[in-house]
Structure formats: C-alpha cells, structure tokens
Length: 326
Ligand code: NDP
Image (tube, rainbow, N blue to C red; front, side):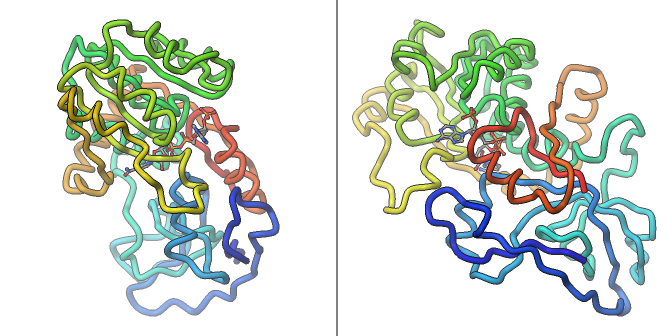
C-alpha cells in the first residue's frame, strides 16, 4: 500500500519536495473492519489551509476517495461495494467503517463513480446549499460567482440558470471562459486579463448583483461588494486567493458598503446540511442524467501524480473537478 505524507509544512505554494511517498504495511482485519482500495481520489483547495493548521510533518495528506471494498469483516460493507471514504491520500485503507459512506444504492451504470467526488458529492452539495440555503436565490435575480470553472463554481452557475437566474462568472483563462459560455452562463470574463475588474463587473450587470457566491475572497471581494444591489446576499464559501497569506487577514471587505447597502453575508460549511445529503444527491443525479447539469472532470492518471494534481489545482490548471484516477 502507498500513501503520500506531508514532509514539511508548505511555505507559500506547495512544491513537490513538501510531499513524500511512503509504503505502508497493512494490518490483518479485525471483526467489523474492511479493506478498501482507492479508485478515484480528490484534490481540493481546503487541503492547503488544512495542512497548515491541522497537520504535522509525517501525517498522511487528508482527502476523500471513491474506493472499492476488497476484504470485509463488516456486513454493512460487503466485498465489491463502493464507498466514499475519508481515507487520505492512500491506495489502500483498513477502516472500521466510521470514515466510509456507501455510494447511493441506485447509482446509475452510465455515471462514473468519480462524480461522487464532484458534482454528485461534496463540491456539488456546496453549490446547492450555498444557493438554496444561504442565498435562497430566486428566479430573475442576478448572481455573481468566481472561480466559476471549478468544481463548485461550475455547478453554482448551472444550478442558478436552472432556477431562472442571470449568471455572471469569472475565471482565469480564455479556455475556461469559453467552457462557461457553453454551460450557459450569461456573462463570463477572464479576471486575469480584464483591464479593470470593477468595469468588467459593471459591464456584465450594470444594474448590480442580488447574490454573490464567493469562492475567492481578498481583492476580488473588495471590488465586487460595491457592485451589489441594496439588501444583496453574499455566500462566503471560500477564499482561495487568501490561502497563501502568511499573516492573519485584515478585513478585505469594505465595511461601509456592507452598512450602507445593508448586505447580508454568511459564511458556511457544506456539512451544516448533512441530514439532507441523500435527498440532495438524488436531485443532482437526476439533473445530471437529464442533461441539465454537466460535470467536466480534470483527470490526472496515477496515484504517484497526486502532488502534481494538487499543485495544478492551486495554480488554476483544472477545468471542472480535479480527480486522480489510480
Ligand atoms: P476549484 O475546482 O474551483 O479549483 C480552484 C480554482 O480556484 C482554480 O482552478 C483557480 O481557477 C482558482 N484560483 C486559484 N487561485 C486563485 C486566486 N488567487 N484568485 C482567484 N482564483 C483562484 O476548487 P473548488 O471548486 O473545489 O473550491 C472552490 C472554493 O470553494 C475554494 O475556495 C474552496 O476552499 C471552497 N469550498 C468551500 C466549502 C465549504 O463548505 N464552505 C466546500 C468546498 C469548497 P482560475 O483559473 O479561475 O483562477
């Protein structure tokens, strides 16, 4: 069995030498335990700040995977069943089942299991709950979403279109802009090449924004907030532009804009609505099968390439969900 461990804490952007590939000896199974083998692994932005605050050198990198049960002494997880597991960056894991969730029973044959790490998994749920629970978005409203070509952002935009909204998205390359137009976004721009972010936001929606789904934070948010309509709502989902900050952040938000426009802003973690996950995943799966939701994946092949895939994600190389196929 192989595992990727954190060799040393990241200084700024992670580099290859911060990771180490280790071989693990697997223990014999005790009663109640199972052995799972990774099929697809996920790399996600949260691994960056998480490694700084919750991990020590020598720890296996945290992460989710879709895995197959290959040995079992636990009747809840028979051999051959598929699970989503919080197993870390590992090829094989012995688990007592507490870190595993069975895939939906009626997972359709024509849908890759890898989507359980993307649109039909945590990122998709983040998009759905951010829109429905935090923003309570309504038809006819105008929504702004950044990191729009990513795992969360691409689902946010598509679901908002399904709900009858006008959607404006930003992304970091022209190829991503073209992809988002194909997905049906109303206005998309490349935030790296526009002359003025403020002008780009104004041009895309001169009347302003009712809702802002923020994946990026920092400078982008400081510029976006004054473009909100009065009583606008903001879902603070992520701050990928700030994950590299060495110093604690000092307020990126223009306080006066918040007050004068009486904005509603709420940070959230997708786990808050865990009790709704089964029903929500079924809804998303139906949209996927009906062709209403498109899920692009950025697939890297080979477990040994996990650090490369992770670093690529943080540099914006992924279009859609970043996945590693073992
Ligand atoms: P993505 O698939 O969107 O990948 C990250 C993308 O962020 C990159 O492709 C890149 O796209 C963009 N990016 C990287 N650096 C910057 C930067 N400095 N400024 C602007 N954009 C940048 O990741 P996810 O969809 O998985 O996650 C999106 C956000 O949602 C993250 O902030 C994540 O932490 C957060 N999140 C929050 C959850 C919650 O419960 N609150 C749950 C899941 C995710 P580009 O080329 O466009 O720059």
